[in-house]
Image 1 (cartoon, rainbow, N blue to C red):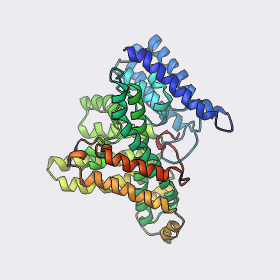
Image 2: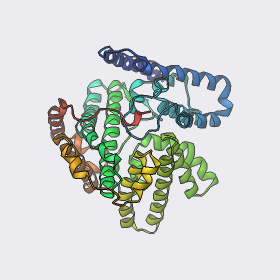
Image 3: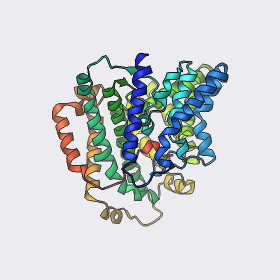
Image 4: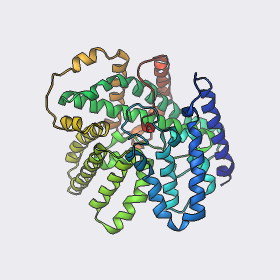
Length: 415
């Protein structure tokens, strides 16, 4: 606990210092500029009320906290998390989705300590997660060894985010189309964008914390090395999956069948992302795909579960991204109801965006087809941590570093 008392506090101060050093380079100083301080205030409030009045009602309070972001979404105080670029609709509630889930988890398990406040409100964690359901001080490991182990993750994250994800944003013009070909192409590209954006930033955060002496969960584990939807979700946003398992799946499984428990989990996840029709549909759709995959695997129909996984990921991402219900219905009709504009749209896309798309497809293909090879088997991006590959990643970053193509933003902090 010594690290949590001292190291986590120092890490918080360092994170705040870095953030405000960046703010001072900006032309304006607004409420948006100081938004990272509000999570600390609300964390103090949560801990105060819990310790003072609500310890006897820990489970009720935990669920209230988890769904607090659903309530703010319902009343339009915050946006839904559909992956689109947007400034915070309410800077005062910046990071609510992440620090409320953090407190919900630890309050439910009765593991909350006042010192956890510096973890919950750390600005770096609130950029995109992960939800720190577990953390461990590793300052006993020499700094040289920590840098040696964690820096490769940092480089992978930078390349995923800057080189692959960001240049894909010009393709987002396709979201307005309802033609089946353009809808499917957008679904594939947007899935790649969300993966490399979210995973890239998560790896950056993971590496920074590791170098500074705090081990946090690895949020992604090569999800495209999967062969079915069950395995896919084990590798995707693992910190949220763990919170959902503890808060919803295990309690529900004691009372209901596995199918009902899974529907509760996915609908709870949908509500965490935002209260809107597309997320209800997204939760129900993935619950159905997950349950159907379980049934297929029980009958040893592994090939069928693989064939289900690919369209399920693409269709799920189409549903995830579209908050306009009428347009979503048109998209899911999978018909050609207007002229196909994809060729004309692609003419205006920068060459760099196509290169990023090829790199994204290449890495996902390697994850998928080489999953049983030595450097892929652990699903910890070990292949990209080979020294020769690290040099290649450095070259890629240098080549792309000066590019102004695309919009840089954290896909999972857009509220």
